[in-house]
Image (tube, rainbow, N blue to C red; front, side, top):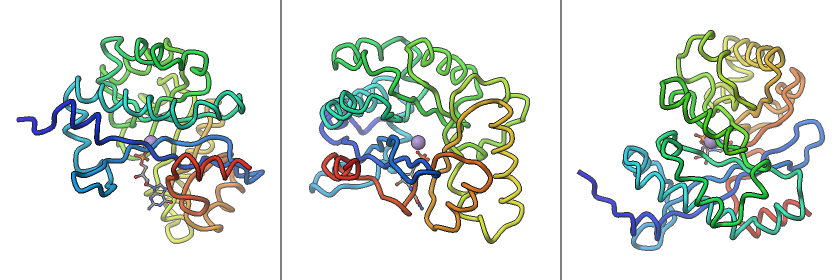
Length: 244
Ligand code: G
Ligand code: MN
């Protein structure tokens, strides 16, 4: 049974923004909007404890996504206008794309002009069933780019993955963490880089924490990364400061 109401979701969810860095220039090229949860006592917490419940119900998942786009517009609206090449990624649960409810939200928020600057992230695990494949198609129809999140963790067949029409693969941080200590993880990351290059899709490496990890990724041709090496998820003021 659900313990969360629409009202609670709308008043508790807010966004933080983690910079996405061009590994060759070390400059910020975009960010990922990460959902945070404000607990009853005002503390900021991770959304982990409620995310499964939110994403299992269509109305709550839509409330979550609406909150994220609404924060994004309020926090980064000016930035999107002033920096037309800056792009923002938002996690998009497939369940919210199914009923064409997102477009009215984007229209109401005045985000239509910025659709090419937005990327919807769908996890590899969610991308491969029928609902996930439909979600990818619907996101593309909306005019946003599509990224496969947590790439490498879904235990999917290569054949299924190659069939997905996406713009970007986001290599999961569990592989990045093992660079330098686990040869198998290094080979896998090299393999993903080669695959992406053949498929002509972009790569973002997630969870980069050390200069050595960044150097390895740069050396094998991965263009973009995010992680604590540069910044944790920031509020809008901190993100604007990064741009200067
Ligand atoms: O599922 P997704 O890959 O979008 O999850 C991003 C999560 O990873 C966020 O909760 C974020 O706080 C966390 N994260 C981002 N950068 C790093 C990092 O460099 N190291 C670790 N351990 N976690 C990170
Ligand atoms: Mn993500």
